[in-house]
Length: 336
Ligand code: PMP
Image 1 (tube, rainbow, N blue to C red):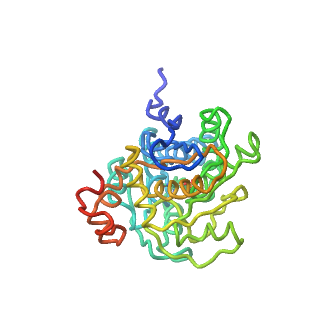
Image 2 (cartoon, helix red, strand yellow):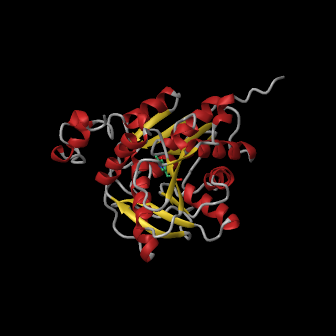
Image 3 (cartoon, rainbow, N blue to C red):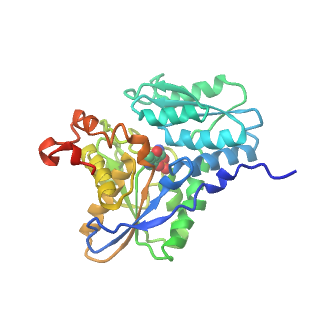
């Protein structure tokens, strides 16, 4: 019999690394790893594949089983893509602030989506992670992917994202700018680079309102605010997050994140999501503050096509107070 593993799974990872050419990066060279080129459109395809492969390997997921997850969208898309390719049912709990395009994409992939409140915190029965944990107990044969505590999440980055960056930069990289959602990316990269380049500088890009940046500065978990950027920022410190490599942290407002994502499209022709705006804003600030020509890597975490009704919708941006008419003039020109 021929191998029936769908070829789409082999398209996950090995994403391009491209230099920023037209934005002001001070004395530095800034590279972006285009995770938007993964078949499901985000960095989380790697994690979806690693968690399902891991669960199959140790028997937590069996043929006919169900994958359950609490997700801001992209992990769900990664899981749904891999689960569909491998023939599993998927049940996802998604907070209601997430872009409609993501939810429609999840449903198109055959996932069952439970929408829950974005405005409640850990411990509340409608909090998306507690809700998913409950569903996983109720559904027979369910595997709770639990990206916030699953070691296969950082492993995906320690075994693929990290080595790819190391190879693509010709073993010459000074700093990596990342955000924290589940903490999988930063933890996996920290683990990988600890061995190959122990002095690597991690720069945290955090949405204003998230508690992570302040935690890296003071070790204290403060009161969380709210932010519109999707996929990064937390109101707690995720269990798997290794923040020990963070030497500098920036808190970026929604206005700057969304504006920078639009700037990336205008200047470089790269259509990215809102968390990329946060990462790029922090990366540009970091680069411009340097005296020496460092080589810096950051990420295009996901594709902007799933935010067309938000980041790239002038009316939505105006309604949210993220765009100023007088600053941008005629709105028709904003993304031209
Ligand atoms: N950007 C986007 C768009 C995401 O969906 C995620 C994952 N939630 C991240 C960044 C952050 O990655 P991690 O979960 O590995 O911290």
